[in-house]
Length: 624
Image 1 (cartoon, rainbow, N blue to C red):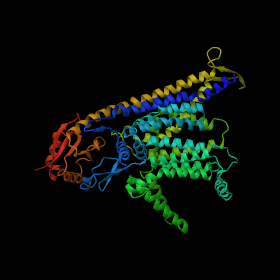
Image 2: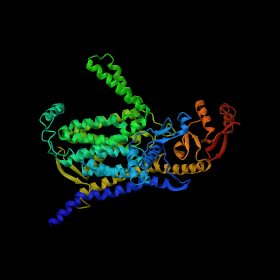
Image 3: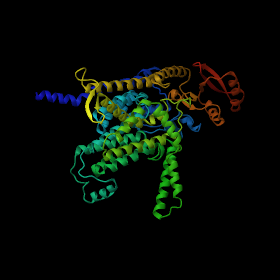
Image 4: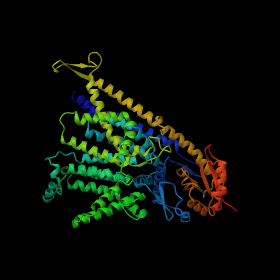
């Protein structure tokens, strides 16, 4: 009998894993299928793999992750860029004196490239699905720490079907999913390293006094301690570091969040854990610092020119502000503060636009999640009985992150879709706001749990509002017990959300995965046709197909509307075959180019072939 009770107890404890593990496997297979069916390692044409991506950012990340895995380098030397003022490069890359380098953050390149170095570069497209699948487990563990096991299980199933998480996992060379799951893992281990109970309460206003007195009494530096928590602290630091190098720009809200959490838990952290967390962060940042110095001549600067200018401006203004404060002079303080503010909000500060974008990409695009999470949020914080202090701090922390993310990214103008009026899942707002969606999901789950619990058993009261009985919607005698009723209602609720989400991400949006896969197949046809026609050393001038033809062909992103660019094209014609691939020209445009625009530079344009009904390949030739 005792043995049977132990078995039942173990089953009750581990039964969620019987649902989670199949979910993780299905999620990995489902999100990997896009790359499996659209990428090709058969090397059927010129011994070149067909591994192409739908955006310049993905292309750049894959090319350099593969290059780093094979050679340990993060730049490609293009000698002809010395003749053309570094214009021979695709988007999301930059060229400095012939050296083509990444523009974006180096984290995904270094991390995936290191893994591929010890395995094979062919696994690179599948690394984000793999880690995103593991991220479901850590998301479950983290939510369980904050809410309940039931909430964590429901939240994980909703996340596994959430359109943005699936979409950018399938489009596996974006940084956002890697950043988000690294942050989830880091927060989970940070919670574990704080798991010991507090011996004394500490008020937030006295936190610095406590820290100072503890150092004097040598409380923080004793050799005794829980080594398991020390290991958790180090792991948390390593994953915080991975999150930072994956998307360094997220420090704008990550630093306030981590500083806020550290202050709240200063007593339980102690100096040893703080040092270990910082050590883990710095250890992961070192490779990024190293390659930043090599590529961009500074450990703190990256490939983004705008971000570099912001970093320099913030550094200079902060130093000047500090100097004035030390000297007691504040004549130019307003100007320095304004410079810092403008440098942080480098793309502008537009609160009204931010709220509009948030309404479109949060409330309208994912209305079910938004309304459920709002209701759950209100019930959790304002209708759940007496609150502990930690609930109010959680409310403040979530509100802070929400406000920063919405105002910062909402102030930008993103036009990833050629139709600038379209609001689709492929626009950058959705991937930048992925942490917001993940934060909303547990509150949606919380509301589902509370409503189904209330519906399974309804209290009956008399006129004096005194309880006189209970009405079980699913009576134990007639049907089954209330707990089973709750399970059925939750299963149906979550099932409907999952079906709706999967339909949206696969075919309910004009940028759904089904349409993306069809576009990838069309791109492969164009690639094969153009690669077959053009020479190995040829240059292709194009507007949007740079991500398709690079690195098999040299590419220039350009048109014929800029005379300076045409003059540079002219320099290349003497050395290399130069082609132009874009929408096909009507006869009048060909005549205009040959008789006026290009003739001025001694060039002519000749139709080579109509590759598709809308795109054609032309060649630029010298006029004899």
